[in-house]
Image (cartoon, rainbow, N blue to C red; front, side, top):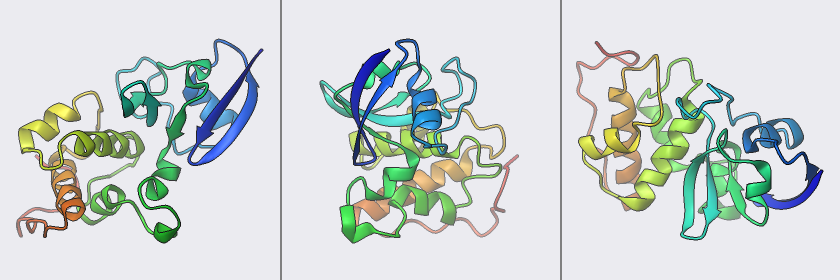
Length: 182
């Protein structure tokens, strides 16, 4: 067993973990952060994406590719802590702008990919606050969704970007029906 100290969603934890324990399993099984989904366990789907501090700041990582011991001394933000990530107590009870945009733009269907997709989209906007459709699609290419057809996800990222910048999002076309797109 190895002793680690990690801050998750603003709370510091000190735990003993097996050196081979993946971060996704530590988050879910030891900390109860079940919003971080176990998808493929091979880093292909991105459902387990969380934010983690590193030497160059905070970035998204696929938590099925990170050992819990690698998170020692770092900060991790999961989908459960996202609303408080940039606002603290004044955001209590409110969704993060990306979570709100996914809801308003119908950017989810079954919801399995949603936590990882949202976390990756947040990282994308931190690097590029006003991305094009192509930049959004490229930025999310490591996260798979089998239900939505992605158009509403792209629309949600644009809406969150606009909200973050304090701009009005472009209205969704009237002929777009929520859910999968052909």
